Length: 227
Picture 1 (tube, rainbow, N blue to C red):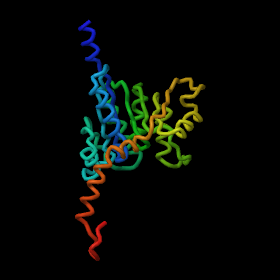
Picture 2: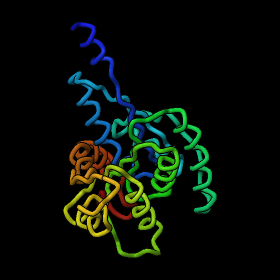
Picture 3: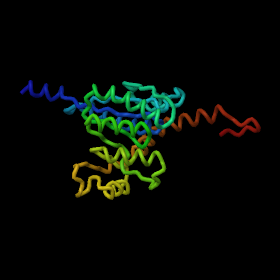
Picture 4: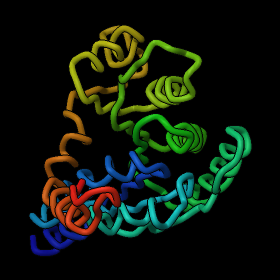
């Protein structure tokens, strides 16, 4: 019995999050908190969570600041793709993501939102036959000329688990044949709420503290009014 309990305690799931743009860092923060809270309960299986930063947004003063201020673990991989046209940036992401994901053997690959990093992560996970989950699934603008709309739709249709922020997002998925009664692929969707709202609640104190410090130290040159 003790050996069986030890095996259960040693059991792990590997989740890999793919992010690369500033809004995705914000969305990642509540997910990291939830995983940490789950692991702290020492339930089985534990979750080993790795983070891949594609480098889509790479300015240290902007990108890395999110990890520090929001208490996000530093990325396990930084692909450093940098800027470029959509085609060049996507090509670098796909090539470098494939190198990492092909050896990580993830139980779940998680993509966030609707950026080039989202699209590249979804494509590589699908080609490597890795289970894919999409945070903020089902969001639609109904403008197919938007790169973000294209990324959302592709990521949703390639995912096996769709985590929607609202009822309207769930309805968008059902209309597209995802996770409804006629979905022959067995995809699953759940309304889990808005991770951006979760991040706001978690970081209100940080924002308020920064705001007070900034307002006290900065003033218009023309008068004494602070802003």
